[in-house]
Length: 154
Image 1 (spheres, one colour):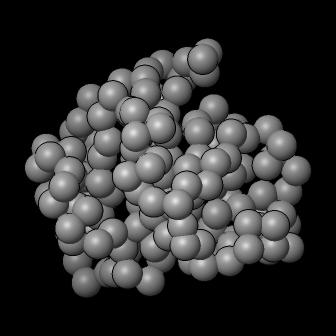
Image 2 (cartoon, helix red, strand yellow):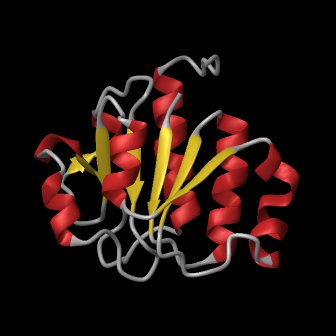
Image 3 (cartoon, one colour):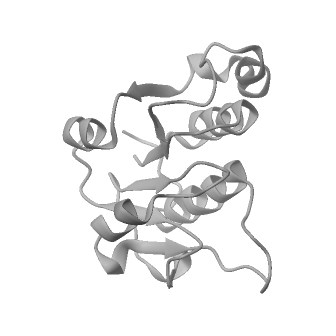
C-alpha cells in the first residue's frame, strides 16, 4: 500500500489521528526522530484510540534510515512551497508521502532532494498558511487510494 512519513512530528493528536487514518486506509506510518512527544503519550493514545494495534507504525532515527529500509518506489515531498498539485499526479502502490513538522514544514534541503515533479502541494485559498497535518495526510492518502480503486489488499 502507501507509506506516510512524518518528519519530526510535534503535536501528539495529529500523529494519533494519522495512526487512525492509516489503520483505516491500510497505509504504513513512519515517524522520523526526534519526535516532539513521547509516542506512548496519553494524547497520542487518545486520538489514535485503539487503532495503533491495527496500524503499522515504525519510528526511525533519520529520514535516510527510513528511506533505506522502506525503499519506496517513489517518494513525494508534500509542502506548501511545492508547485505541483497533488491531484495531478498518478500514484502507484508503494509510493511514500513525506510531511514536515507542524510548525515549520519540511526543511528546504529535503524538499530539494526530492525530484521536482514529486514535490506536491494541496491547493488552498491565498493568504492561508497550511492545513492541519492530519487533514493534509488524509487528503493525499485518500486521493492516492482512490486512484487505485480503494484496493486495500497488500
